[in-house]
Every structure is written in structure tokens, then in C-alpha cells.
Image (tube, rainbow, N blue to C red; front, top):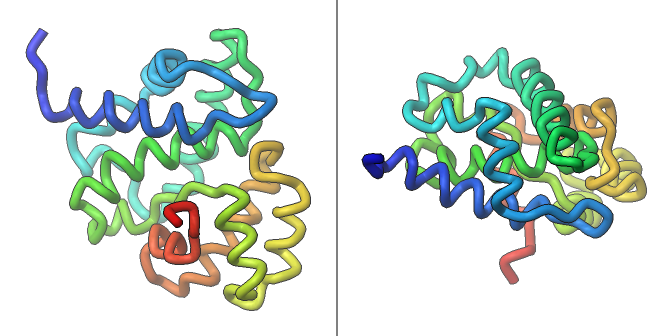
Length: 178
């Protein structure tokens, strides 16, 4: 087997995503995360930014990816919510593309950012976009318990708050690095 940069990115991104998406009540190994991402076809995106959906298709593609990840997790004996599936996908794509130097590509600018309690808390505290009520609804639901509608509502409010800026920039409010 030749070892390419695409394989290198995939392994790193799967590790990061597997660690980040683990949450109390839904524990799994990095190896399981990697298999789930591969079964869902996300590894096929890594080689070229052109493999990502157009900006207008990201939300629809993301819903399909979440459903595929949930099914792949079930095959591993795991029960993923849309929140856990989204976190796995979003960290994976962030590591591959956003932090891979492709952050200005239109497709990458439209990718969903990872959602967690640290981000939601800060969005609420600062009333980002004037959506404090909506951020609080999401906080109470807890990201790891999100169903599809709850997840998509958070993303919709992020899109509105960002007003055309790359969605990854919402993470300026994430304080998890401190």
C-alpha cells in the first residue's frame, strides 16, 4: 500500500473526529469512527476539494451524510444521534479542508462547523446574530441529543448570523482552546 497525503489526512481527520464526537452515553473507539467515516463514503471526499458538494448543496448532502453515518454506526452496534453524527462529520471535514489550507474555497466556506456546548454557550452569552433564544433552546436540548430538525435549526441560525462569511468563522466564539 502506498501512503499518500490523502491517506495521511484521512487518518488524522478520523482520529480527531473520533475523539471529538465521543460523548457520555455514546462512546466508541477511534478505529470505529474511522470505519464509520469510510463506510459513509466520506474518505472519498478527501483527495480533492472538487469532491465536495457545491455551496447550495451542502445542507442536503450533510443530511444524507448524517443518515449514512447513523446507519454505519448502527452496523457497529452504536446508536448515533444526528448531533453525534454531525460532530463526527464536521470535525472530519474541518481537519481535511478548513485546516488543510482550503478555507477560502466556496465549497469549504459552506461546510458546517462542529457544534458543541462550549460554542452554544458563548453564542448565547454574546447573543450572536440576535438569536439568544434559539441558542438557549439548542443548549437545553444538548448537541449530542440533537435530532435532524434541531441540528438543522442551529445550522440555519449560524448561516444567518454569518451573513455570507465562511461558516467556519463562527468558531471564533468557541472557547474550547482555552
